Image (tube, rainbow, N blue to C red; front, side, top):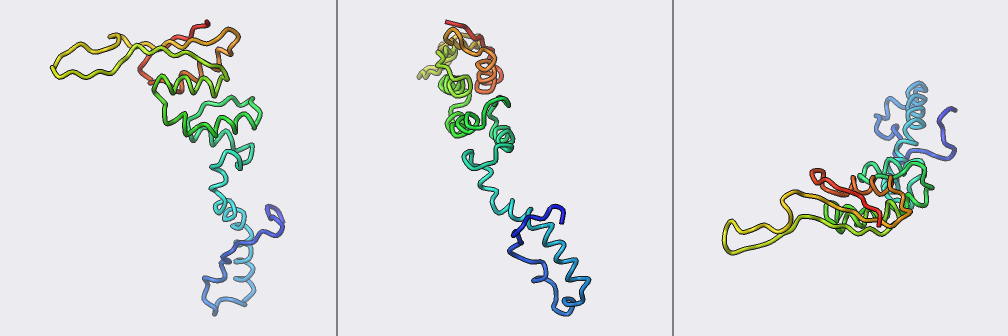
Length: 173
């Protein structure tokens, strides 16, 4: 039968929810069995959905969806193991997203180079109002990477990790 998976049966057959007076007539039994065969793969997938959210267990063809769902920019040409390695780092990348530390971590994970990140902003506190704010008036993020780095991968990593309103520049050391 098309779409059937050998040995896969639904743990809750539909016949269990039908009044006994309707069972045993042949037509309804056949219809319920057909629905059970159609629903078994769907229910098996839903029962193991948590495995699809684990980078180590999800099927290779599902890695792109998981990365998109987490908001991590991956390259579709990467081998599955590299994608899994980046997705394992996703909680840490998301925790620090928008900070200089997060930009450096994203460049390290996605472009596989260490970057120096210089942020023009600052945070300060003063007991008197209208004090001078630290940092520059115009926001700017400078990301310095070593020579030979994949600048396209660095650019993608920075775009995904920095605040959207902050302009940036990638420099080669």
